[in-house]
Length: 409
Ligand code: ATP
Figure 1 (tube, rainbow, N blue to C red):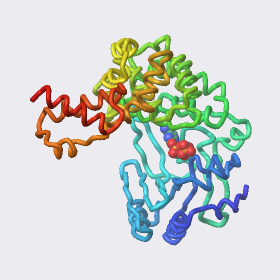
Figure 2: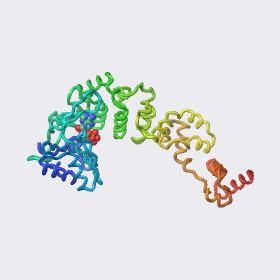
Figure 3: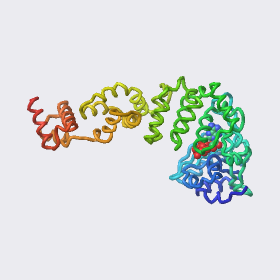
Figure 4: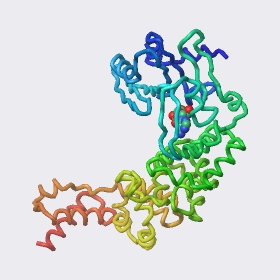
């Protein structure tokens, strides 16, 4: 199959990569999701793609992948990282990231650990991949650039709209493919082929997900949340017991109802990820940031605050109850709650949190207030009064300050 117009879409730095590899006597290929999306006719995704996936075969040329990465980044004013042990690397240019791997085969010494890799040809490289539709390559060098290489029937599966693994041990070798199968099926609106689904369920039931490191589980969850169809993917993953398979955890009964509320509220992928952290048994072995941990705890421990919030009579009380909670947690809680709690959370986010007294600390100092803790207390009283509409204008605020000073002094 010739797909030469493919070549016209290639960004210039990729094209230069290809020329260099050809000059060195090697071979270069387009691989991965890019080829899949192109063959699916999804050209807009291709045009706007900020990341390109190339595979090169430099065996017998005397050059290494690291030398290629180095040269490309030098010539295009970019940076590069090379992961020699995995035979992969990335060149980052101002508007483009090129992932370049050396064509290789893989061997898994045991389930769920990272593979050992050895340089090999393009066919072996495609056979080590996750799904047939992701195991397609297009030649960029040689006599017939633009030729599609399809050793696993990926083209037919694209037409049949099926996610199919390439060998029966695939999910055992790498259980992250369980997440990936569900994710790609939802994103592309494909079905998981029946034999693949059977093996996916078997791998879940036999506990292979539990072998993944916390880091890899979180990476997969972040990828899920970043998808436009994240809620659909989560629903399918929960149905297949994927999350329960990763953690010592049984799904809370309310989880799906909460996800539905978050979906209706249209929250972002980042917020969805933080919400999930709050409902999963994420311990200190999970690499999450301090900010994520704070949001997680704020959501998890909200019940007591909610009871107080329900009873709050004043806007200053609402402020004091919520001021220490991180904004992402408040947004998530506003989407999850109903009635008076929801209203107060929304009021806080939209209005109360933005209110400031007119008078500033500098003005109070200029008016003769001494620096120190008293000043801080005065500013707080001023803010509470403003929130509760006891003062409106600057003059009202000055009157209040003078009253407080009179009392204390
Ligand atoms: P997109 O970038 O559009 O999300 P993609 O298919 O390019 O989709 P990546 O995660 O960037 O997704 O992976 C690039 C390619 O690397 C895949 O198409 C697949 O061929 C291969 N790949 C990625 N992860 C695995 C895995 N766990 N096992 C086997 N092959 C994988």
